[in-house]
Image 1 (cartoon, rainbow, N blue to C red):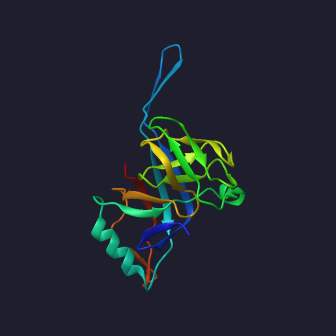
Image 2: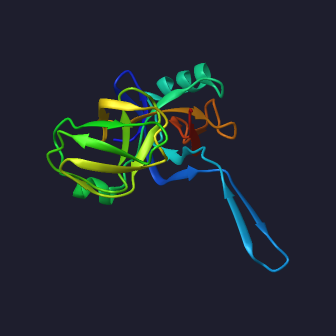
Image 3: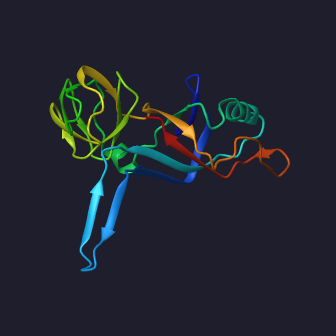
Length: 196
C-alpha cells in the first residue's frame, strides 16, 4: 500500500492517477541553425503527484500531520513501485551493496533472485531514492539512477513496498481540510517532493 506513512502505518493511500516524475535541471538552447544544445545538471529528485483516498473517521490523522508539518518539515511516503517491476521481482533475501559516491553502479552480494529495472531502492545509510536502470539477476553489478550520492560498503537496501521516501509537501498543495459530502475529507491532488 503506497501513501503517506506515519509510525509504521499508511494513514492516507495514494489513488489514481499517480505520477512519479524524475526532476533533473536541464537547460536547452536552440541555435539559429536549429541545432539543439542541451546541458544537464547532476542534481535529481523524485516528485509524486497523486490524489489521496478520501477519508472520514480517520481524517484527523492526516489533517493533524499536514498542519503540523506544513511546507517546511518533511513527511514519510511509501514510494510507489512500478507494477511491471513488482510482477517480475523474485528476490526474497537481504542483498547488500558496495560502491563509491558518484558512480552509476554498485556491486551486489547475497541476492538470490531478480530485481527488475524500474525498481525503486533505498540504501540503509542514507535517504536518497534510486531506480534500477537494468535488471539484476543474482549477484553482480547493479546499475542505478541517479549516480550514487553517498558511498556504500556491504550496505543493505530496501527494494519492495518498504522503500520509504522523505518528502516535503509542495507549496501548491493544501495543508488543511477540504471536505466533500459532509464527512469525507478529500484534498484532491497532493504533490510531494523528495527531500535531498
